[in-house]
Image (cartoon, rainbow, N blue to C red; front, top):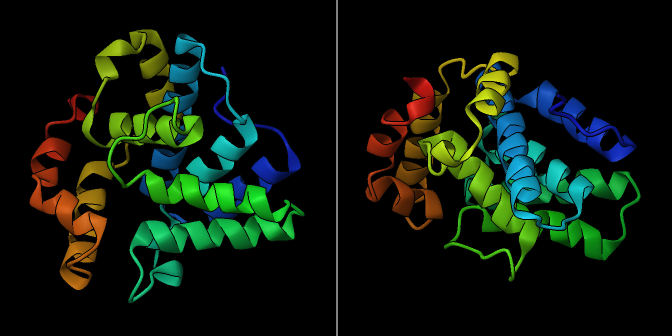
Length: 194
């Protein structure tokens, strides 16, 4: 069972994510992809696998010091990182915009698979990994193998601190609403950390 995609764009996204994200954030990105991809397979959702993988690997880079914007929400900053990387990879403008959109929408209200399958998959994957939403729907063997290959590495407290910092500095961003809605409690109760 592999948790990576082997295309030039996927390898570049993993390389960049590995350079800029610490272990906790990098493993979260890989697990988010894996949960979303497994959900797609289990529910027969046809999607652009490469687009989804690249977006998943880059979705939280706006939380890292080099890419943290003092004005933009982290998901918008991360979307711009994806646009720049994929431009360098030769993606056409429309596909670059889709990578950005998928990353931005993962912090918005629920997006259905019918509306935007890749954004839906990133929401499913990140929600499973951050707060344990729908984790019980995944095969326990799959989840155990994923956590063995990409351990949590203290992700819950690390992520809580990152989004709380975003909320303090950018009170009108989606992270602020997420924190105000009880994110810390949900993250702390994630069954993946039990």
